[in-house]
Length: 448
Image 1 (cartoon, rainbow, N blue to C red):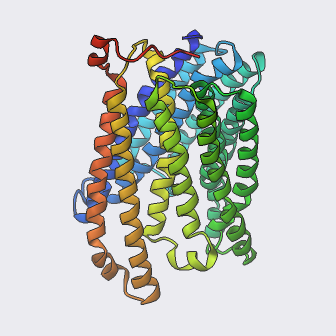
Image 2 (cartoon, rainbow, N blue to C red):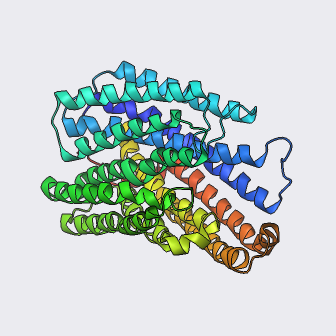
């Protein structure tokens, strides 16, 4: 470890992995309800299961982002975190808020807006946590070295907090409500979260390839520029059918089509840097997650997003299983995998245990990714059939649901595979490869 306060990331990564397990188990339960609709209908209604599944996803990703910042900012700024005490208080407050929110959902205490169901006091607690974190990171950045990686990461984190403030605005007019609702949801996942992802990937590639920082930073500026240029007006693809003026169909179609570009640039950037770097870094599992993130983010957020983002196509596919296919692969490829990449890279340093179980970690990559890709393909097939039967032929929703039931079984089976991959990842990350220890195994991973 170069900096003592990098250890602040450790509890954040542990909480992220714990909530990741809870999230995928909730998703598996939700997928099972699609097969057996009356399962737990009285005890835990489907809307509550879905609420826990999606909220756990957001919370564990945020835990991962916070942990990533506390790990990489000291190295980038070449100084210790401003206040370890604030970081520790922030952790426990955020963990308490997450647990209280889930408990409240189980007892029917929530608001109705999707992804923003948290009661008012939980939203206030989230803002307090964000302010504590941003003060701590910003003060660290101000007193230390400024790099493109740290500046873009902090810009993304500030954007994350600022756009969340729109969660407090809940107008009675439904069209207006959805307009501002997307200010949080879209501008997070197709805006500032992309900046965070790009900064973390850049940090990992600099550390693992040894390539000149200047090359990585030039790519980073290009990716960030394209992200902001396309992502802000790309929000128009959510404004097609909510009562907004017709010009949003043109704006949304054009700019959301261009949203493919930054993800394509990330793929080219990652593989180009690895090829030019030429260093055989000992943490091959972290490298695998890093490159996998670039590829699946491009397909999930880029290709699958483009498939149904043009207004004439979206008119038919909107709200079908095509949307679910895009959402699952996009979140997994872009944000789940970047968190797993930084956790895989950082945990050996944080635990002070070398070597660690790389083989099982890489197996978890292939199992988890295969399960998610298969799930995406089954949901895509279900969505195409659903679009044709329901939107083109006019067959009723419930009749179509029966027709595509086989795909829900396949989706449930792929969910089992994903859960196995997640459990294997947690075990591999927190265990030590005794076989490698006996034979001398992997050479120590430098804490560059």
